[in-house]
Image 1 (cartoon, rainbow, N blue to C red):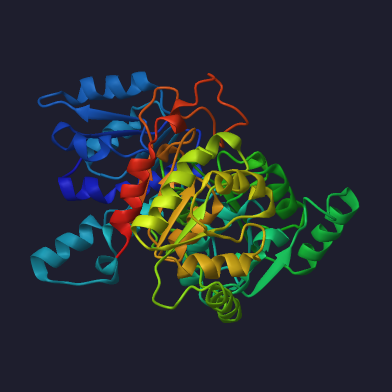
Image 2 (cartoon, one colour; image 1 turned 180 degrees about the vertical axis):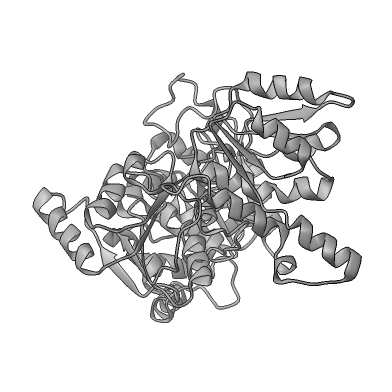
Length: 480
Protein backbone atom coordinates (compact mmCIF):
# COMPACT_ATOMS: atom_id res chain seq x y z
CA UNK A 1 0.00 0.00 0.00
CA UNK A 2 3.01 2.24 -0.55
CA UNK A 3 4.14 4.41 -3.49
CA UNK A 4 4.33 3.63 -7.19
CA UNK A 5 7.98 2.54 -7.17
CA UNK A 6 7.37 0.06 -4.37
CA UNK A 7 4.39 -1.38 -6.22
CA UNK A 8 6.45 -1.90 -9.38
CA UNK A 9 9.13 -3.70 -7.36
CA UNK A 10 6.57 -6.26 -6.22
CA UNK A 11 6.07 -7.62 -9.76
CA UNK A 12 8.89 -10.21 -9.50
CA UNK A 13 7.42 -11.32 -6.19
CA UNK A 14 4.11 -12.22 -7.82
CA UNK A 15 5.87 -14.14 -10.61
CA UNK A 16 7.77 -16.21 -8.08
CA UNK A 17 4.69 -16.75 -5.96
CA UNK A 18 2.90 -18.13 -9.00
CA UNK A 19 5.87 -20.35 -9.85
CA UNK A 20 5.86 -21.79 -6.33
CA UNK A 21 2.08 -22.05 -5.93
CA UNK A 22 0.60 -22.46 -9.42
CA UNK A 23 -2.88 -23.39 -8.16
CA UNK A 24 -3.22 -20.72 -5.48
CA UNK A 25 -5.55 -17.73 -5.64
CA UNK A 26 -3.19 -14.76 -5.46
CA UNK A 27 -4.56 -11.29 -4.71
CA UNK A 28 -2.82 -7.92 -4.41
CA UNK A 29 -3.88 -5.11 -2.09
CA UNK A 30 -2.77 -1.75 -3.44
CA UNK A 31 -3.76 1.91 -3.46
CA UNK A 32 -6.44 2.72 -5.99
CA UNK A 33 -4.08 5.09 -7.86
CA UNK A 34 -1.63 2.29 -8.67
CA UNK A 35 -3.97 -0.63 -9.34
CA UNK A 36 -3.34 -0.49 -13.09
CA UNK A 37 0.31 -1.39 -12.55
CA UNK A 38 -0.73 -4.82 -11.29
CA UNK A 39 -3.89 -5.48 -13.28
CA UNK A 40 -1.98 -6.64 -16.34
CA UNK A 41 0.16 -9.13 -14.41
CA UNK A 42 -0.84 -12.70 -15.30
CA UNK A 43 0.40 -14.06 -11.95
CA UNK A 44 -2.24 -12.04 -10.06
CA UNK A 45 -5.82 -13.33 -9.89
CA UNK A 46 -7.38 -10.29 -8.21
CA UNK A 47 -6.35 -6.70 -7.46
CA UNK A 48 -8.00 -5.26 -4.34
CA UNK A 49 -7.81 -1.51 -3.91
CA UNK A 50 -7.71 0.72 -0.87
CA UNK A 51 -10.41 3.30 -1.50
CA UNK A 52 -9.79 6.96 -0.82
CA UNK A 53 -11.04 7.81 2.65
CA UNK A 54 -11.75 4.16 3.48
CA UNK A 55 -11.44 3.58 7.20
CA UNK A 56 -9.04 1.01 8.58
CA UNK A 57 -11.96 -0.88 10.15
CA UNK A 58 -13.78 -1.11 6.83
CA UNK A 59 -10.59 -2.29 5.10
CA UNK A 60 -10.00 -4.99 7.72
CA UNK A 61 -13.59 -6.24 7.39
CA UNK A 62 -13.23 -6.42 3.61
CA UNK A 63 -9.96 -8.35 3.76
CA UNK A 64 -11.29 -10.66 6.44
CA UNK A 65 -14.28 -11.44 4.22
CA UNK A 66 -11.90 -12.75 1.52
CA UNK A 67 -10.77 -15.56 3.88
CA UNK A 68 -7.10 -15.59 2.92
CA UNK A 69 -4.99 -18.31 4.53
CA UNK A 70 -1.70 -16.43 3.98
CA UNK A 71 -0.77 -12.75 4.04
CA UNK A 72 2.56 -11.47 2.73
CA UNK A 73 3.09 -7.95 4.06
CA UNK A 74 5.48 -6.01 1.82
CA UNK A 75 4.58 -2.62 3.29
CA UNK A 76 5.35 -3.23 6.96
CA UNK A 77 3.86 -0.07 8.41
CA UNK A 78 1.27 0.25 11.17
CA UNK A 79 -1.73 0.05 8.84
CA UNK A 80 -0.51 -3.02 6.98
CA UNK A 81 0.36 -4.71 10.27
CA UNK A 82 -3.15 -4.10 11.60
CA UNK A 83 -4.68 -5.46 8.38
CA UNK A 84 -2.42 -8.54 8.60
CA UNK A 85 -3.15 -9.10 12.29
CA UNK A 86 -6.93 -9.03 11.91
CA UNK A 87 -7.11 -10.59 8.43
CA UNK A 88 -7.99 -14.02 9.81
CA UNK A 89 -5.07 -15.58 7.92
CA UNK A 90 -3.33 -18.49 9.61
CA UNK A 91 0.05 -17.36 8.35
CA UNK A 92 1.52 -13.85 8.09
CA UNK A 93 4.96 -13.16 6.64
CA UNK A 94 6.42 -9.66 6.74
CA UNK A 95 9.49 -8.23 5.05
CA UNK A 96 12.22 -6.49 7.06
CA UNK A 97 12.05 -2.82 6.24
CA UNK A 98 15.30 -1.69 7.94
CA UNK A 99 13.38 1.42 9.04
CA UNK A 100 15.67 2.15 11.98
CA UNK A 101 18.82 1.94 9.84
CA UNK A 102 17.25 4.28 7.31
CA UNK A 103 16.42 6.84 9.96
CA UNK A 104 19.96 6.75 11.34
CA UNK A 105 21.34 7.35 7.89
CA UNK A 106 18.95 10.20 7.04
CA UNK A 107 19.44 11.97 10.34
CA UNK A 108 23.12 11.39 11.11
CA UNK A 109 24.51 9.76 7.93
CA UNK A 110 25.32 6.61 9.86
CA UNK A 111 25.65 3.85 7.28
CA UNK A 112 25.32 0.10 7.77
CA UNK A 113 25.41 -3.12 5.75
CA UNK A 114 21.62 -3.26 6.06
CA UNK A 115 21.33 -0.29 3.71
CA UNK A 116 23.38 -1.95 0.95
CA UNK A 117 20.57 -4.37 0.11
CA UNK A 118 17.97 -3.57 -2.52
CA UNK A 119 14.32 -3.42 -1.45
CA UNK A 120 13.49 -6.13 -3.96
CA UNK A 121 16.03 -8.43 -2.26
CA UNK A 122 14.22 -7.83 1.02
CA UNK A 123 10.89 -8.64 -0.60
CA UNK A 124 12.26 -11.90 -1.99
CA UNK A 125 13.83 -12.80 1.34
CA UNK A 126 10.40 -12.57 2.95
CA UNK A 127 8.93 -14.62 0.14
CA UNK A 128 11.43 -17.39 0.84
CA UNK A 129 9.99 -17.81 4.36
CA UNK A 130 6.49 -18.62 3.16
CA UNK A 131 6.97 -22.36 3.04
CA UNK A 132 10.18 -24.17 3.88
CA UNK A 133 8.95 -27.31 2.13
CA UNK A 134 8.19 -25.56 -1.15
CA UNK A 135 10.89 -22.93 -1.51
CA UNK A 136 10.50 -20.49 -4.36
CA UNK A 137 14.20 -20.40 -5.17
CA UNK A 138 16.52 -23.33 -5.53
CA UNK A 139 19.00 -23.58 -2.72
CA UNK A 140 22.65 -23.81 -3.70
CA UNK A 141 24.19 -23.72 -7.15
CA UNK A 142 23.70 -26.82 -9.31
CA UNK A 143 26.84 -28.40 -10.72
CA UNK A 144 25.38 -31.18 -12.87
CA UNK A 145 22.23 -30.33 -14.83
CA UNK A 146 20.05 -32.56 -17.00
CA UNK A 147 17.65 -31.00 -19.52
CA UNK A 148 15.00 -33.39 -20.85
CA UNK A 149 13.45 -32.70 -24.26
CA UNK A 150 12.23 -35.74 -26.17
CA UNK A 151 9.55 -34.09 -28.32
CA UNK A 152 9.82 -33.21 -32.01
CA UNK A 153 12.26 -31.22 -34.13
CA UNK A 154 10.54 -27.86 -33.75
CA UNK A 155 10.28 -28.29 -29.98
CA UNK A 156 14.00 -29.06 -29.82
CA UNK A 157 14.95 -25.91 -31.74
CA UNK A 158 12.68 -23.81 -29.52
CA UNK A 159 14.44 -25.24 -26.45
CA UNK A 160 17.88 -23.92 -27.45
CA UNK A 161 17.33 -20.49 -25.83
CA UNK A 162 16.67 -22.28 -22.53
CA UNK A 163 19.92 -24.21 -22.99
CA UNK A 164 21.77 -20.92 -23.46
CA UNK A 165 20.04 -19.31 -20.48
CA UNK A 166 20.93 -22.23 -18.20
CA UNK A 167 24.57 -21.99 -19.24
CA UNK A 168 24.56 -18.24 -18.72
CA UNK A 169 23.10 -18.61 -15.21
CA UNK A 170 25.33 -21.56 -14.23
CA UNK A 171 28.47 -21.24 -16.38
CA UNK A 172 30.47 -23.69 -14.22
CA UNK A 173 27.83 -26.44 -14.28
CA UNK A 174 27.94 -29.44 -16.57
CA UNK A 175 24.85 -29.43 -18.80
CA UNK A 176 23.60 -32.64 -20.42
CA UNK A 177 20.57 -33.03 -22.69
CA UNK A 178 18.40 -36.14 -22.87
CA UNK A 179 16.70 -36.33 -26.29
CA UNK A 180 15.71 -38.70 -29.08
CA UNK A 181 18.13 -39.63 -31.89
CA UNK A 182 16.00 -37.71 -34.39
CA UNK A 183 16.74 -34.35 -32.76
CA UNK A 184 20.20 -35.04 -31.29
CA UNK A 185 21.96 -32.89 -33.90
CA UNK A 186 20.11 -29.82 -32.62
CA UNK A 187 21.90 -30.11 -29.27
CA UNK A 188 25.07 -31.97 -30.22
CA UNK A 189 26.96 -28.91 -31.47
CA UNK A 190 25.53 -26.39 -29.01
CA UNK A 191 28.51 -24.84 -27.18
CA UNK A 192 26.69 -24.98 -23.82
CA UNK A 193 25.96 -28.73 -23.99
CA UNK A 194 28.52 -31.06 -22.43
CA UNK A 195 26.85 -34.32 -23.43
CA UNK A 196 23.85 -35.57 -25.38
CA UNK A 197 22.16 -38.65 -23.92
CA UNK A 198 20.06 -40.54 -26.45
CA UNK A 199 16.66 -41.99 -25.59
CA UNK A 200 15.16 -43.86 -28.54
CA UNK A 201 11.69 -43.92 -27.02
CA UNK A 202 9.95 -44.50 -30.35
CA UNK A 203 12.37 -47.23 -31.43
CA UNK A 204 14.57 -49.75 -29.70
CA UNK A 205 14.11 -48.33 -26.18
CA UNK A 206 10.34 -48.69 -26.02
CA UNK A 207 10.40 -51.60 -23.58
CA UNK A 208 10.25 -51.16 -19.82
CA UNK A 209 13.55 -53.03 -19.45
CA UNK A 210 15.36 -50.58 -21.72
CA UNK A 211 13.84 -47.62 -19.94
CA UNK A 212 14.95 -48.99 -16.60
CA UNK A 213 18.50 -49.26 -17.98
CA UNK A 214 18.28 -45.57 -18.87
CA UNK A 215 17.09 -44.74 -15.35
CA UNK A 216 20.06 -46.60 -13.85
CA UNK A 217 22.43 -44.79 -16.20
CA UNK A 218 21.00 -41.41 -15.23
CA UNK A 219 21.21 -42.31 -11.56
CA UNK A 220 24.91 -43.13 -11.93
CA UNK A 221 25.55 -39.71 -13.45
CA UNK A 222 24.51 -37.99 -10.19
CA UNK A 223 22.57 -35.04 -11.57
CA UNK A 224 21.53 -32.49 -8.96
CA UNK A 225 19.01 -30.65 -11.14
CA UNK A 226 16.61 -31.65 -13.92
CA UNK A 227 14.95 -29.02 -16.10
CA UNK A 228 12.03 -30.51 -18.02
CA UNK A 229 10.35 -28.36 -20.69
CA UNK A 230 8.79 -31.52 -22.14
CA UNK A 231 5.41 -32.01 -20.51
CA UNK A 232 5.10 -35.80 -20.74
CA UNK A 233 4.70 -38.16 -17.81
CA UNK A 234 7.69 -40.19 -19.00
CA UNK A 235 10.05 -37.22 -18.81
CA UNK A 236 9.07 -36.37 -15.23
CA UNK A 237 9.10 -40.04 -14.24
CA UNK A 238 12.63 -40.58 -15.57
CA UNK A 239 13.96 -37.66 -13.51
CA UNK A 240 12.13 -38.86 -10.41
CA UNK A 241 13.24 -42.50 -10.71
CA UNK A 242 16.82 -41.33 -11.33
CA UNK A 243 16.75 -39.66 -7.92
CA UNK A 244 17.48 -36.18 -9.19
CA UNK A 245 16.71 -34.03 -6.12
CA UNK A 246 15.42 -30.94 -7.95
CA UNK A 247 13.01 -31.36 -10.84
CA UNK A 248 11.71 -28.21 -12.54
CA UNK A 249 8.84 -28.32 -15.02
CA UNK A 250 5.47 -26.93 -16.03
CA UNK A 251 2.13 -26.98 -14.26
CA UNK A 252 0.68 -28.57 -17.43
CA UNK A 253 3.06 -31.53 -17.20
CA UNK A 254 1.35 -34.91 -17.04
CA UNK A 255 3.83 -35.73 -14.28
CA UNK A 256 3.64 -32.48 -12.36
CA UNK A 257 3.13 -34.39 -9.11
CA UNK A 258 6.66 -35.76 -9.57
CA UNK A 259 8.21 -32.29 -9.82
CA UNK A 260 9.69 -30.31 -6.96
CA UNK A 261 9.31 -26.90 -8.64
CA UNK A 262 6.34 -26.12 -10.87
CA UNK A 263 6.10 -23.10 -13.19
CA UNK A 264 2.74 -22.01 -14.69
CA UNK A 265 2.28 -22.99 -18.33
CA UNK A 266 1.03 -19.88 -20.10
CA UNK A 267 -1.02 -20.20 -23.30
CA UNK A 268 -0.82 -17.21 -25.64
CA UNK A 269 2.95 -17.00 -25.12
CA UNK A 270 5.62 -18.07 -27.58
CA UNK A 271 7.08 -21.46 -26.75
CA UNK A 272 10.55 -19.90 -26.43
CA UNK A 273 9.28 -17.53 -23.73
CA UNK A 274 7.37 -20.34 -22.04
CA UNK A 275 10.53 -22.43 -21.83
CA UNK A 276 12.55 -19.47 -20.57
CA UNK A 277 9.96 -18.98 -17.81
CA UNK A 278 11.44 -22.09 -16.18
CA UNK A 279 14.40 -19.85 -15.30
CA UNK A 280 12.15 -17.93 -12.88
CA UNK A 281 12.73 -20.70 -10.38
CA UNK A 282 16.35 -19.57 -10.18
CA UNK A 283 15.39 -15.95 -9.60
CA UNK A 284 16.08 -14.99 -13.21
CA UNK A 285 13.51 -12.47 -14.45
CA UNK A 286 13.05 -11.93 -18.20
CA UNK A 287 15.99 -14.14 -19.16
CA UNK A 288 17.53 -13.47 -22.53
CA UNK A 289 17.96 -16.34 -24.91
CA UNK A 290 18.49 -16.79 -28.60
CA UNK A 291 17.56 -19.64 -30.88
CA UNK A 292 20.82 -21.40 -31.63
CA UNK A 293 21.37 -23.51 -34.70
CA UNK A 294 24.48 -23.31 -36.84
CA UNK A 295 25.18 -25.54 -39.85
CA UNK A 296 27.98 -28.01 -39.37
CA UNK A 297 30.88 -27.01 -41.67
CA UNK A 298 31.10 -30.47 -43.25
CA UNK A 299 27.35 -30.55 -43.90
CA UNK A 300 27.42 -27.00 -45.30
CA UNK A 301 30.23 -28.04 -47.63
CA UNK A 302 28.25 -31.05 -48.86
CA UNK A 303 25.20 -28.89 -49.50
CA UNK A 304 27.28 -26.33 -51.36
CA UNK A 305 28.62 -29.12 -53.55
CA UNK A 306 25.15 -30.48 -54.27
CA UNK A 307 23.82 -27.04 -55.14
CA UNK A 308 26.77 -26.41 -57.45
CA UNK A 309 26.20 -29.76 -59.17
CA UNK A 310 22.56 -28.76 -59.67
CA UNK A 311 23.63 -25.53 -61.38
CA UNK A 312 23.04 -23.19 -58.43
CA UNK A 313 25.77 -20.55 -58.38
CA UNK A 314 27.01 -18.87 -55.17
CA UNK A 315 25.23 -15.61 -56.01
CA UNK A 316 21.89 -17.18 -56.96
CA UNK A 317 18.89 -16.55 -54.75
CA UNK A 318 17.45 -19.70 -53.21
CA UNK A 319 13.97 -20.08 -51.74
CA UNK A 320 13.35 -23.14 -49.60
CA UNK A 321 9.88 -24.66 -49.37
CA UNK A 322 8.55 -27.13 -46.86
CA UNK A 323 5.13 -28.26 -48.07
CA UNK A 324 4.66 -31.17 -45.69
CA UNK A 325 3.52 -31.78 -42.13
CA UNK A 326 2.69 -34.72 -39.92
CA UNK A 327 -0.88 -33.35 -39.76
CA UNK A 328 -2.86 -33.15 -43.00
CA UNK A 329 -4.77 -30.01 -42.03
CA UNK A 330 -1.50 -28.15 -41.45
CA UNK A 331 -0.58 -28.53 -45.12
CA UNK A 332 -1.48 -25.68 -47.42
CA UNK A 333 -3.08 -26.73 -50.72
CA UNK A 334 -0.68 -28.41 -53.19
CA UNK A 335 -2.01 -26.22 -56.02
CA UNK A 336 -1.14 -23.18 -53.92
CA UNK A 337 2.45 -24.25 -53.38
CA UNK A 338 2.75 -25.18 -57.06
CA UNK A 339 1.50 -21.79 -58.26
CA UNK A 340 3.79 -19.86 -55.91
CA UNK A 341 6.86 -21.96 -56.70
CA UNK A 342 6.31 -21.53 -60.45
CA UNK A 343 6.07 -17.75 -60.09
CA UNK A 344 9.19 -17.57 -57.90
CA UNK A 345 11.20 -19.39 -60.54
CA UNK A 346 9.66 -17.59 -63.48
CA UNK A 347 9.20 -14.02 -62.21
CA UNK A 348 11.90 -13.69 -59.55
CA UNK A 349 14.54 -15.85 -61.25
CA UNK A 350 15.22 -17.60 -57.94
CA UNK A 351 15.96 -21.28 -57.43
CA UNK A 352 13.53 -23.43 -55.47
CA UNK A 353 14.51 -26.36 -53.27
CA UNK A 354 11.84 -28.48 -51.60
CA UNK A 355 12.95 -30.00 -48.29
CA UNK A 356 11.47 -32.31 -45.69
CA UNK A 357 11.56 -35.83 -44.38
CA UNK A 358 10.70 -39.04 -46.18
CA UNK A 359 7.15 -38.87 -44.81
CA UNK A 360 6.64 -35.57 -46.66
CA UNK A 361 7.37 -37.15 -50.06
CA UNK A 362 3.75 -37.87 -51.01
CA UNK A 363 2.60 -34.30 -50.27
CA UNK A 364 5.53 -32.76 -52.17
CA UNK A 365 5.14 -35.12 -55.14
CA UNK A 366 1.57 -33.87 -55.48
CA UNK A 367 2.88 -30.29 -55.59
CA UNK A 368 5.52 -31.21 -58.20
CA UNK A 369 2.92 -32.89 -60.42
CA UNK A 370 1.10 -29.55 -60.69
CA UNK A 371 4.16 -27.41 -61.46
CA UNK A 372 5.31 -26.21 -64.87
CA UNK A 373 8.83 -25.19 -63.80
CA UNK A 374 11.54 -27.53 -62.49
CA UNK A 375 12.60 -27.03 -58.86
CA UNK A 376 15.08 -29.07 -56.84
CA UNK A 377 13.41 -31.82 -54.83
CA UNK A 378 15.52 -32.93 -51.86
CA UNK A 379 12.69 -34.26 -49.75
CA UNK A 380 13.90 -37.30 -47.83
CA UNK A 381 17.41 -36.82 -49.20
CA UNK A 382 19.06 -34.84 -46.38
CA UNK A 383 20.16 -35.65 -42.89
CA UNK A 384 19.12 -33.24 -40.16
CA UNK A 385 22.55 -31.59 -40.31
CA UNK A 386 22.19 -31.17 -44.07
CA UNK A 387 18.65 -29.84 -43.66
CA UNK A 388 20.00 -27.13 -41.36
CA UNK A 389 22.71 -26.33 -43.90
CA UNK A 390 20.40 -26.07 -46.91
CA UNK A 391 17.90 -23.90 -45.03
CA UNK A 392 20.75 -21.62 -43.90
CA UNK A 393 21.66 -21.14 -47.59
CA UNK A 394 18.16 -19.86 -48.42
CA UNK A 395 17.25 -16.18 -48.70
CA UNK A 396 13.61 -16.92 -47.79
CA UNK A 397 11.90 -20.01 -46.41
CA UNK A 398 8.23 -20.75 -47.22
CA UNK A 399 6.68 -23.31 -44.91
CA UNK A 400 3.69 -24.73 -43.14
CA UNK A 401 3.56 -24.63 -39.34
CA UNK A 402 6.19 -27.32 -38.75
CA UNK A 403 9.66 -28.08 -37.44
CA UNK A 404 11.68 -26.70 -40.39
CA UNK A 405 10.00 -23.32 -39.75
CA UNK A 406 11.91 -23.01 -36.49
CA UNK A 407 15.15 -24.20 -38.07
CA UNK A 408 14.84 -21.31 -40.53
CA UNK A 409 14.15 -18.83 -37.74
CA UNK A 410 17.10 -20.11 -35.72
CA UNK A 411 19.26 -19.84 -38.85
CA UNK A 412 18.25 -16.15 -39.24
CA UNK A 413 16.47 -16.88 -42.51
CA UNK A 414 13.30 -14.79 -43.10
CA UNK A 415 10.28 -17.06 -43.11
CA UNK A 416 6.82 -16.92 -44.63
CA UNK A 417 4.72 -19.27 -42.50
CA UNK A 418 1.25 -20.51 -43.42
CA UNK A 419 -0.97 -21.20 -40.41
CA UNK A 420 -4.30 -22.98 -40.87
CA UNK A 421 -5.78 -25.00 -37.99
CA UNK A 422 -3.22 -23.64 -35.52
CA UNK A 423 -2.86 -20.03 -34.41
CA UNK A 424 -0.19 -17.74 -33.00
CA UNK A 425 -1.74 -18.02 -29.54
CA UNK A 426 -0.56 -21.62 -29.25
CA UNK A 427 2.97 -20.24 -29.07
CA UNK A 428 4.75 -21.72 -32.09
CA UNK A 429 4.79 -18.78 -34.48
CA UNK A 430 8.14 -17.57 -35.90
CA UNK A 431 10.18 -16.14 -33.04
CA UNK A 432 11.56 -12.63 -33.47
CA UNK A 433 11.19 -10.00 -36.16
CA UNK A 434 11.50 -10.23 -39.93
CA UNK A 435 8.99 -13.05 -40.40
CA UNK A 436 5.46 -13.21 -41.79
CA UNK A 437 2.55 -15.40 -40.71
CA UNK A 438 -0.24 -15.77 -43.26
CA UNK A 439 -3.53 -16.83 -41.68
CA UNK A 440 -7.25 -16.14 -41.84
CA UNK A 441 -9.38 -14.82 -39.01
CA UNK A 442 -11.96 -17.57 -38.56
CA UNK A 443 -13.98 -18.36 -35.46
CA UNK A 444 -13.22 -22.08 -35.84
CA UNK A 445 -9.48 -21.53 -35.39
CA UNK A 446 -7.71 -23.16 -33.66
CA UNK A 447 -9.45 -26.49 -34.02
CA UNK A 448 -6.78 -28.35 -32.04
CA UNK A 449 -3.34 -28.14 -30.51
CA UNK A 450 -1.55 -29.81 -33.41
CA UNK A 451 -3.92 -30.04 -36.35
CA UNK A 452 -5.86 -33.09 -37.53
CA UNK A 453 -6.21 -35.54 -40.41
CA UNK A 454 -9.23 -33.67 -41.74
CA UNK A 455 -11.12 -30.44 -41.12
CA UNK A 456 -13.63 -31.04 -38.28
CA UNK A 457 -16.20 -28.84 -40.05
CA UNK A 458 -15.50 -30.15 -43.54
CA UNK A 459 -14.87 -26.78 -45.26
CA UNK A 460 -11.07 -26.34 -44.67
CA UNK A 461 -11.48 -22.58 -45.10
CA UNK A 462 -8.41 -21.85 -42.96
CA UNK A 463 -6.25 -23.07 -45.85
CA UNK A 464 -8.52 -22.66 -48.87
CA UNK A 465 -8.98 -18.94 -48.19
CA UNK A 466 -5.22 -18.29 -48.41
CA UNK A 467 -4.48 -17.26 -51.98
CA UNK A 468 -1.29 -17.91 -53.99
CA UNK A 469 -1.08 -14.18 -54.73
CA UNK A 470 -0.71 -13.13 -51.07
CA UNK A 471 1.83 -15.87 -50.40
CA UNK A 472 3.87 -14.92 -53.47
CA UNK A 473 3.87 -11.25 -52.50
CA UNK A 474 5.09 -12.12 -49.02
CA UNK A 475 7.97 -14.12 -50.47
CA UNK A 476 8.85 -11.40 -52.97
CA UNK A 477 8.88 -8.72 -50.26
CA UNK A 478 11.40 -10.76 -48.30
CA UNK A 479 13.86 -11.29 -51.12
CA UNK A 480 16.74 -8.82 -51.15
